Figure 1 (cartoon, one colour):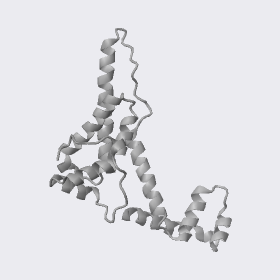
Figure 2 (cartoon, helix red, strand yellow):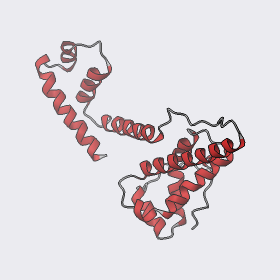
Figure 3 (cartoon, one colour):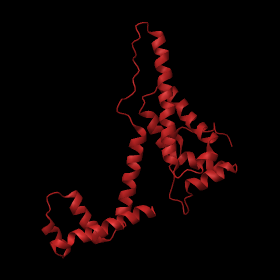
Figure 4 (tube, helix red, strand yellow):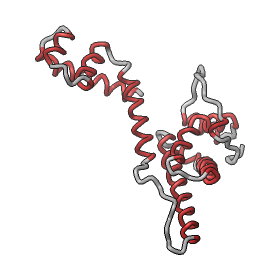
Length: 201
């Protein structure tokens, strides 16, 4: 198994709904045991995330492809330490961002040396914060998945409280068939239910 044998994201198959989807730790363990299939499954799971992070830095195609490969080489060399981490996604986001940033700096230095006036025509998007964006997306997905597991009453209450600003407590209470004074305690129970659902995930 070689770290360099990484396909570009466009040619990777989209992972299907397998009967048993191995978690990241299991896949990393199998990679450490020399399992080629596990390595390619791990790449297939995160290739588009890595590509999306690198794309934010507006690298030319060749440099972007090199950065993509470098991320997986870095992962291959760090498998043993990554295995002990809770989630692989944030590690890959951080590594991809740093790799792309380093590539941008090399390009900037190259262009600067070619332009006597020091003008740079290569810029990094100052608003790009791929690590924050990826974690924010992951958190949003987790909250939505946990929300879907709540009881119908809690889903209805929390949706009314946080997504419909025009609804009053009295209207919510009427909808739930309870008194307005009981909204607070019910809300507390629903928050605990949501917290437990998030912890389970």
